[in-house]
Length: 82
Image (spheres, one colour):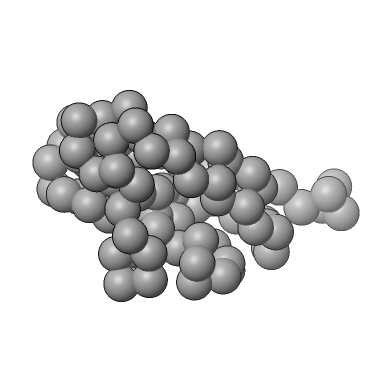
């Protein structure tokens, strides 16, 4: 998965991925990475390991940003499934 993220919000933010197995540096949690500043960019890039339905959301002012609709789902399909 490659996401070229540009923060066009007036506040810092990140993308945090729920349920995916990925490197800490791609997690989007403020414990392991600094938020992307307004106007800043970050390239999330990692291999999708395992099929499923996952979701993502910001991890900077999560309460406000999620309430304003900044979240989504990610469907990862297994190429070997019928």
